[in-house]
Amino acid sequence: KKKAFLFDLDGVIVDTAKFHYLAWRNLAKEMNFDFTEEQNELFKGVSRVRSLEILLDLASYDATQEQKDRWLIQKNEEYLKYIKGMDDSEILPDVVRVLDFLEEKNQGIALGSASKNARPILTKLDLLDKFQAIVDGNDVTAAKPDPEVFLKGGEALKIERTDCIVFEDSIAGIQAANSAGMISIGIGEQDVLHEANYVFKDFTEMSNAFLLELIEA
Ligand code: G6P
Ligand code: MG
Image (cartoon, rainbow, N blue to C red; front, side, top):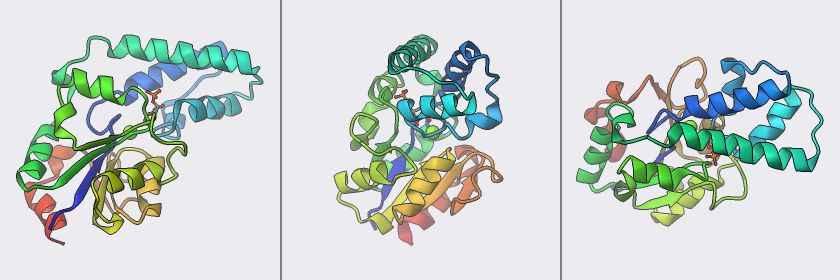
């Protein structure tokens, strides 16, 4: 059966999650706030604007709109510096094996990311043509955990939501997939992503046999 496999980008296809974290942490320093990796879990999958709001809240910092706009630009400029020299060697292990297997089985493959930088990143990774549809931060109005990004991905591939499978490294993304009525697969730690239907540490732990079961279910 033809299913739709919807991939998050940051932290699933490539380890840009660490660069987002570094850029937010440096911004937090300007608020005299020590932003921890544990707090960062709540930022994963969340849009840039929403992330800044959460950071200001955590830091109990009152900023003017002007200051917020400046910080949003600053954060993205720093992030872009980190990913400037990125190439296909930074694709996470076995991502290409999974993409190729799904393609060979004629499955739908789409990207569902909150990032506005998704297309340039996929281009750097030379993965753009592996995706039949791309839904990113430029296409959605509601951020994860709202299901919009994945619903649009499923629609773009013309696959019913119950036949959609989402790969996500973030709590917000797993919640988005669940509330879309899709199958959620966490990529990361079980204790963080316990709301997912399945959790794998990374794609090396996910066999083709498992993918085949999802396709045939
Ligand atoms: C992804 C990441 C978040 C990031 C968001 C927006 O969901 O997990 O950490 O803040 O995209 O990314 P952008 O590249 O548009 O700032
Ligand atoms: Mg992610």
